[in-house]
Image (cartoon, rainbow, N blue to C red):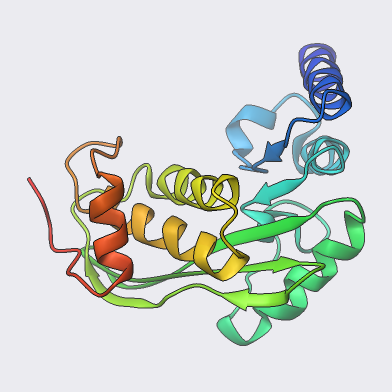
Length: 200
């Protein structure tokens, strides 16, 4: 209700202004149930997400928009392409959809990858990094977004942009704390096949 409506209105206006000025706008529908408790819950979050995502050129965490309410869809690896196509249908002006893909064999080991969609390329997958030794996974999604956005701003194709995102997210998980200290050279080395071993 009140506060969330005002916040969404301001974000919507800011995104529309950015687009009018030719800026690329990104959005991440990162649903947190506790933030929406007392503000309309999942239904209100879904409405806000769709409203804001329709203003975005790039939607990171796009699988968060699959299904009929946030967090509903548990998308298996074989269903990712169809889920991204479903989301693309909801966001006809969006140029790029991207998502991380994580399987968790144990708390300290993750299989890490990504996928994306654009009208230009259709469905594309990022590099697969199995058996990643995780020190701290907090911030890995933000690391993915930063790498992806770097790739897109550098005019990389979607597959290469996903590789930047996947590698940077992996390096974020192997660094203490939730902030990446990885250099571009380290990200590019990981893309080229270097190890993402835990760095202290």
